[in-house]
Image (cartoon, rainbow over all chains, first blue to last red; front, top):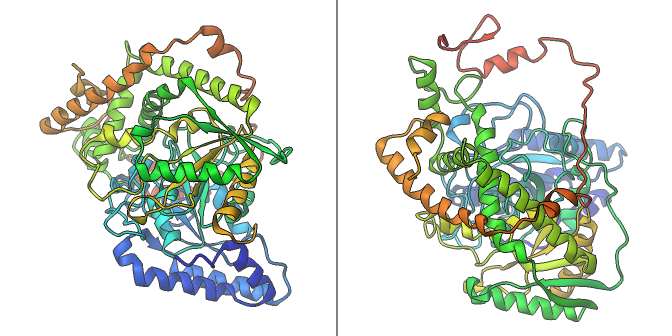
Length: 475
Length: 94
């Protein structure tokens, strides 16, 4: 991965005339041509489109137009964000051939900012998974080690950026699907506060948990994309109009999450401890914190998420769009379209969701989980009275091997332990690469969690650590 | 015992006997895990009352200035598996 090509540097170069949008896009297309037949991060590359738009952007800048925040910057989109006129599948066969009839709000914003949408990336089907192995279109490989997964469900987006096929990407995060692939591929991944970024045009998985966010090489790049895509949207009534920044403390108080070290690989533990040491040297007050209800967060998540996903996936019925089995009766058509169009993990979660919502079980599971959810948020609220942020590992391990976890669904779910509580509590969190690599020299991701709508704290802390960890200039 | 067959019927998923059996095992394992939520002591006051950190408000979206009717009909029906004279075509329901 060429760490010199960041969005921040590139737009400085474009503004100065040291490079052109066309050159940048051509460079990404070259990397895709050379590497993506093996890595398989893209489901479709908008080659002709991208070059034409880049040339037009160059023309406008040549005429004296001021460069926009993302002028000429190639961005890849997880195939769950609608781009008008383009195919979109959510990684599923049930949407094969479907074309978006409108732009997602974030896509409108990216286009207005001059970004070049370079292609749509592979993902676990309907965002259900932590490895991108559940894609109906084949898995994506980790560019840092082709025998391993890039993480999921935004694995394609992470791999695209890590291999140089885009300068940044958008993913979606319901229980860690931006942060975990970022950690597996050595990138920065941000899940904004619930309500910070519009979900209009995002194919919904769990409507009270989903958020769109950026995957980038640096914290500053994540902030650049975040500034473009965030903001209240009348088309998403769960989006909030809250100021972007508050008072940044001169001296950060960071809570170090107390966790069971035996459940985490030794490489991740070492990297985590090293980061704590680094932060202590940066005028941060660090203290261990405990979140007593956290052990129930995973169980809470695996009730709320499948419940909401099973409802959201009810619309795929072979009637309005997508794959249709064309059976003799309406009921058979539903059964066969959905039975054949959905993959194994999607079917599993639909059944689970249906169970926890069904008569006789709703109170014991979904209603109860909704209460536990608020108790978990209370725990975080208590911690944030004393601390500006919480530090934890992003994932218990480094990137695992393809096929290693696909036999045991519960084992895969348990690896979400550090990420799901953030979505449950609706908080913002950022995953960033630790200074120390883990096992097999693979990157380790660490996570800062900040209070509601305090992404500015995440950027400030993230840049502080990045600067110290790499010894490069504070960007 | 979780009645996967009934759940599949409710969620309109056509499953083979083999798939039904495998799902039964998977879902029972997962339900055993999520059932640990029964141990959690939720005080009613904690849960419901203090939602001030994430205030929820009622939003009424006033859809003013709608676009002209039929603007996207062709686009949308082009995606339909079956359509006829501006309608989605479905199998007999009654």
